[in-house]
Amino acid sequence: MNNKILLLALIFTFSSCSIFKSSQTISEKNTNETNDEFVSDNIYQKFLGDYSLEIIGIPTGDDGSLTMKVTMDGDLLKSEYTGESIEAASWAIIKSTEVEDDILFVEINVPEYGVTGYYELYVKGNEVTGYAFDMFEIVGTISR
Image (cartoon, rainbow, N blue to C red):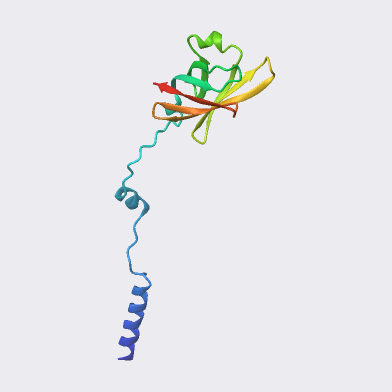
């Protein structure tokens, strides 16, 4: 009789400690959960396209308009001025383009003043906002 009570006590103790509970494998867990958010393999995809930008508050008194195109060259991003901006923006040379923390950084060099800075661009849908040289606001659009 004591053995049966001892056996029942052990079974009750082990079952309450979840030793007999079944566990779910990682693959079962992943198939049972759904993810509504689409994640692109190419993190640069949302930044590729033709930009029409307006730089607000330039010291010359008027706002600066420019157009540029961001493309992929292998696995690197490449930016270049397009249209009338090629000649109008000749004072600012594009050195490099990169994405960091979901922000597009276009490195700009102004040889006349010996200054290097960035266009810091935030893309949400077709809307573009940001800053030029951390001083001037940028607004615009992107078309793909």
